[in-house]
Structures are given as structure tokens and as C-alpha cells.
Length: 465
Ligand code: ATP
Ligand code: MG
Image (tube, rainbow, N blue to C red; front, side, top):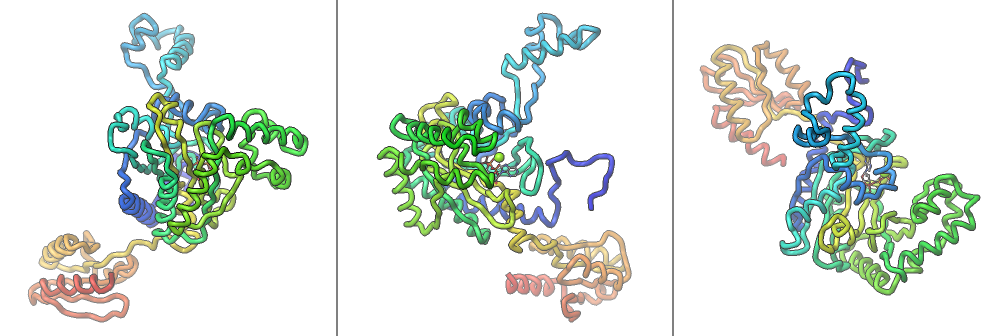
């Protein structure tokens, strides 16, 4: 149990500790390795951006933007401040005028676009970077991935935090060939497969595109159908009939399920091009041996999302069971002021991925030591320091106790630290030039000269890996 000390991590944030961090590292290293095999390069992005970037890209009517963002007004530079107030900035906070000026200041900062937000996701930042660095001049498409913390002010619960971590990738530019959609999905599933995450399900859908004969026509039909069953729906869904009818399909409310099952489905209303694109994505997935389930209710509520959407759900996570969400967003770069650019990507919830891995018994074991050096005596200490250096250089994890202790005590400690071997070094051993290596699992002992010892350990390591 955590100790209720004076300072505690802020609600919805948490410390990640060993040995769990070893699993986080393993997951991240696997992402680096797998994504590299698909030709993706890593992009490292700032953790905060101007508020407007997210407001525009995610949409101001979404929960993320309207309720969940951590937004603050950054301090204006002295020059900006003096322009705003037409007086030296230092007098701003002095005396009785403070309150009034502070309000004015906040308003002006807002107007001068200095509102800043901790990123709730990273797709917008990747698109911003694509535009800012003229990446459309590179060979297309540009394939990028990222990992790191995101921030949303949600109600904390299992699998839902206010600071959480995502691993994501985006393909920007080039064509909207179905093979790209399929390859991105294949990459996600390869990553999960490499982590031996079992019991997952991939759902896919196509949500058409924003042309009169495609999604908008469907949304009209959907809206009309929803109006007819309005009184059987909850308050949230009723509101969404007006603001964003597609989002009603997202509903997890038990009593709305039978009603939603009767609603018109987008697959029956796609235009010919979108229909062909979707069919090709499915064929391409089959070609790649990727198993999927079609889920007509998988939608994204924003106009620039189009065609392919997908989601991966995992076991052992309760209702927070989505570990990856993705889709095609061909209009986004343009919306942010760039050239018309195709785009598709996904974001994996790393916290949930880790929870699911632990749930199926793939958690990290506490880290042991290869060698614990039990030393006694001044000469022995000098040899122990040297041995530790040599062994560590050869890649062994070594515990070198900073103070001398009796061999019995030292061996107890070696055991506690889950050491594989104890190297016993007394002044006798050192003057004889023969060192004793004890295998802790069976208590057997062997004597070696210093060079023999390293050779022996190397061989053992090679055998066991
Ligand atoms: P959910 O419906 O679970 O809220 P979402 O639609 O908000 O998910 P996305 O914005 O698509 O999620 O983000 C992709 C992934 O990031 C999710 O599938 C999930 O695994 C993870 N994720 C999103 N919000 C959180 C959070 N607050 N805490 C932990 N993981 C999260
Ligand atoms: Mg959410």
C-alpha cells in the first residue's frame, strides 16, 4: 500500500517502477524494432503545442477538446506584455490594479494565440511537423512513429489515466492505395504478435467520405431513423442526434443496443469508390494473413476521417478494452494549412497494452543479478572492484557490495537479489590466484583463475540465451 505522505502524485498520474518498467522498455524496444522493419522512422515531438492546433484538428465539439484538455496561458514575453498594456511590464502586478489587469491580460493572451495545451494525442503534432518541415518534398509517403505521454482530464480508473502513454504511427503523403491501409494494420498486428499478446480482436470498418453521394447522405438517413426512436434513447444519444449522429453508434449503454441494431448501416450507403476501396483493404488484409472482424459501428465523428477505421481490443481490461484505434484522415493536413495530403495512422494505448500483457502472464520478473561479489579483506576488495569492471564490460549484471560483510550474510543477500552466482573473494583466494564461484541454485562451487572465470561465465551465458 502506498504511504500517505505529504506529497503524492497528482490524481490520474502515476509512477512507473521496476520491475514493471522493464516491461515498458521491452514494449518500446519491440515497437522500435518492428516499425523499423516496415520502414518507419521515429519522430520526437513537443509535449505542448498551441491550443488551436488541437481545437482545429480534434474538433471543438469533442469531449477531448471541450472537457479534457490541460490548457494554460503561457507568459507573454516582456515585449509582448508591454505592447498589450502599453506600459512597462514590471508595473503590471503592482498595487491595486492587479486584478483588473490580470483579467485583461488573460483575455489578451488568449487573443494573441498564446493559449497552450498539453497534448491529448499526437496526430495533430505529426501533421504540424509534416507541414512545418516541408516533408511533402521528401519521397512520399512519409512514414513516422512516435511514443510518449499524452494528457487528458478524464475520470481516472483502471486503464484510464490523466497522463497516459501512446505508441503511434502515421503515413502521410503519396496515394490512398488500399495496400497502405492494410500494411499499417498489418504492422500493428505484427507488433502485438511479437509481444505475444494473445486474445486480441481487430475490428475494421469503412466510413466513406465527405461527398454528397456518400457519408453525408448516410448521416441524413441515420438521423431520420434516430428521430423515430428518439424517446427510447438516453440523454447523451438524444443530444448527439443533433450534434453528431454517427457518435450514437459508439454508445455502450445496454438498453440502447437493441435499438442501435436496427439502424441503417453505412456499408449499404457507400459510394462506388469507397466501396471498392473497402473491398480492396479486406482483400489485402487476407493476403497478409491478418484476421479481422467487420464492425459497422466503428466510427469517427470528424469530417476529415474517411474510409478505413480500425480498432484492436484486448482481454482483461474491463470496459477500457481498446488498446489501439486508427483510421484514414485524408483532409487533416490541409485543414491545418498544409497541401492536400493523404494520411492514415493509429495510436496504441501503452498503459492498457501493459495491463493486458500482465493479465495474460507476460509481466516482467523482478530483475536479478548475474554475479554477486562476496568479498572480505582489503586485497580482496581491490580484486573485486577489478572483477566487477571486467564482468560489467562483458555485459553481466554485477552487485558489488560497498562494505565488507561475512560470507554467510553476503550469500543471504545474494540470494535475496536473485543472483545466479556468488563470486567469493577473500584475501586467501586473492593470494592463491584461485577464485571461487558458487552457483546459487544448487550450491555447487568451482575454482577458477581470473581469466578462466570470465571465459566460463561467458560460455554459460551463451548456453542459457
Ligand atoms: P476510449 O474510447 O477508451 O476513451 P479513445 O477513443 O478516447 O478511447 P483514442 O483517442 O483513439 O482513444 O486513443 C487511442 C488509444 O489510446 C485508446 O485505444 C486507448 O488505448 C488509449 N487511451 C485513450 N485515452 C486514454 C486514457 N485516458 N488512459 C489510458 N489510455 C488511453
Ligand atoms: Mg476517450
